[in-house]
Amino acid sequence: MKESYARKQKNPGFLQLSTEQVLTDLKLLENGKFNYAALVLLAKKEVIHAKLPQSKTIWEFRNSEAQIHHDSREVIDEPLFIAIESIWKLINQPTLNRKYPVQSGAYIFDLYDFNEEVIREAVLNAIAHRDYTITSEAVVKQYPNTITIANPGGFPKGVTIENILTVSSTPRSRLMTEILEKTGLVERSGQGVDKIFSITLSEGKAEPDYKNSDMFQVSLILRTEIIDKAFHVFISQYQNSEKEPKLGVEQIITLCKIRTGIFQNLKAEIVSQLEKSGLIEKLSGHTNRYTLSQEYHALVNDGLKIGKRYLVKEIELILLALQGNALKIGDLEDLLKESSSRNQINYLKMKLMEDDVLKVEGKIKGARYSIADKYADLRGDVLLSAVIAKLRDKYE
Image (cartoon, rainbow, N blue to C red; front, side):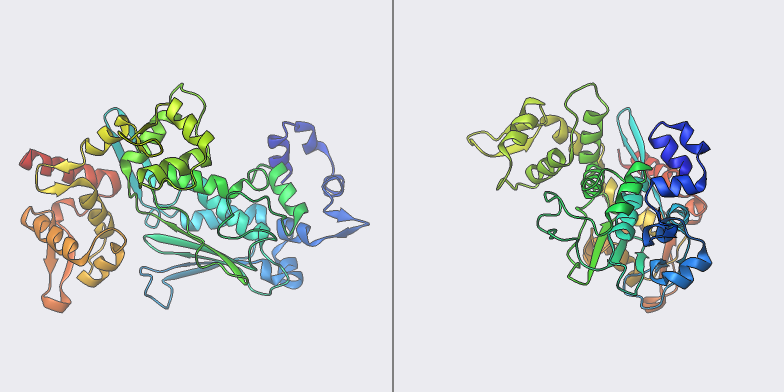
């Protein structure tokens, strides 16, 4: 904690202070006694077990959302400054956090199923804002295509699902929140959710989902599927350019709404800014309807098809689902249900088998599908590049 504070505050002299002085200065030690914030942030395991056992975090992994029993489970009972690293290492295991290569012209970048900044912010929010009077733990449930981060207690006072991006809330533990800010572990108070939304949407993924939250828990669902690769490239090219002003969460959400044809309740000043920046254009014949600029539409049409036979996105999704696995058709459909119908999956599967990309072992209900032997040892971007190159050679 001292190292994080000294680094964030650019105050190396902080490292020379005694532990007692640091704890007193940060109000974690008062009148010779530790408070609960000190326990959550810094206490040894045995003290956490004895004094505040509900401050533990449970991590579970399941290969399918339909599963009742977990495939892996860990109890993280360390102080928060250590626990956050342990939780991220579990989520970020190479087989559980897949890499997704994005290329458009000279732009090449790897996206991951679970973005580190988003996950850290979401987990720290869950731990910092939870209700510690409830004797249950924060729970992280990870699946191949989603992750759910839930904490006991509803939203802080004044916060609802509808206003989560606009309201200034009162944290349950202002002291703990302040220390997390001062040490750089979280954004400024009230901006963590903004960061979660802006990064997730700018990666071309679905909006972070709080629909299962109620007065007893806050539940955040994040989905891995990149539903619009072109949007990610569009946003990234602008953010990495010399153009100003850069996009914040309101601008990115407004661009998402315009992309999907939602024009109600758009803020006039945000729309005006985006129009001046050349990111949106008025639809012909309309005064209050817009479309994303021609740069975006060019990206949509660039390199997303292989001849007249395949969509690159569909191939990438089925290969990433099958890499290292041999799955029954029902399991494959379950993994891809957010993006493809049963008929689409079956049709794509048959085409890829015809092109020797996939193979099947077994018959009827026992049939299992996997990647053909010549690609079986490849993973991630190497696998995708090899298959897509082969199909382009054949059909273009």
